[in-house]
Image: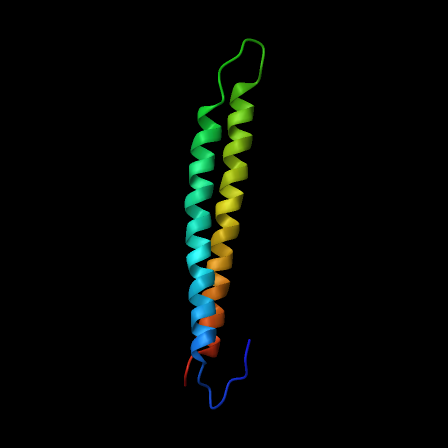
Length: 85
């Protein structure tokens, strides 16, 4: 990031933070769509542990969503720490 003078952020820094926030939102939408697709592709097959597969996939997508939430929280902290005083 660029230099801060007197606690003021440059427009390019604000734009960069907004771009990251926009990318995170788009990534969340894409992950949700992927989760819906993959979970709909699990079919009951005789002799297979379909419930375990569904639970495993669900947990994996929940972990991705939690990671995104953590990144959004971190970005908010960065914005708060670097805002104009």
